[in-house]
Image (tube, rainbow, N blue to C red; front, top):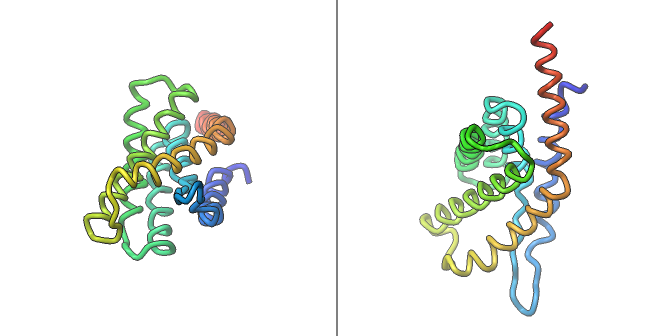
Length: 175
């Protein structure tokens, strides 16, 4: 059972995203702020940092394809972005310390990159029609605040679980 804890958490986060997406948009003073939960990509980036890059990319490909099939009609968008962000995270952590604060900042930066890439893609094909200033104010900032709260709540647990699983994997390889 402990072997599957990484996959089980991924599946749970995959199903939790649309549930938390129901709380969005939030209206404050007549303005609507969109909070996009990116729990799965956050966890995949943590997998790439603390566990295994190849596995993170594989999970990113699988869950990205599932995300494409179930939530949007463009096959390949998330199945390309998720593994790419895992790859970028694993390359960056080669040059920096694996401290939780560094992982948190890196994860938030990569989530912002995901949001900006998706915005640029959707505006280029005509699905979204808003300016970058409106996107920044009403989508990006609230999304980053919501996801940073998620990382502050669960980042230490993800690190602990993934490092323990990594150590178990090393012990099995040494036997």
